[in-house]
Image (cartoon, rainbow, N blue to C red):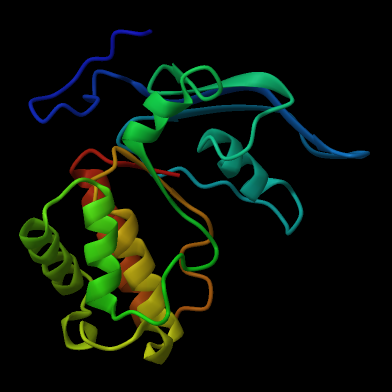
Length: 204
């Protein structure tokens, strides 16, 4: 297992220069080659964009890098950890916000965040404080007691992003994070991402 340089908080430090390194990454679904020999290098503390038309394999790459799909060929490492052989270790450092919100629509915004925080090991009082802090961060304080099904698309997206950031991930994967958002909300999301990167988080 690699010896990863850590900072005072226990996160991979900026001296751990490689957030992501993939070589010859490949994924096949039946007769279709979704990803065919992708090489990728993402330095720590940066914003990296995967660009391409629909069906180009962007989401498949993200799913492989985040340990949700097993590559059929090649290799990939997150902060030096192999995404196949050391998947559990990789998951310690990452978070993923997919194209669709992973929220319980019958619960309020606050209740959703409290549940996510508890899954990270926080006690109820800690989880509640963390949830309210994230709601404030994302401009959702007034929506705290509203069921998710009554939130606008932009508010759901911000809530989903807030849930992804509860554990202070060192690397966050964002799969089309601003799709369907109005210009104001899109700007808020990118401002949050820029702040995280300035604090050492890598965004892909």
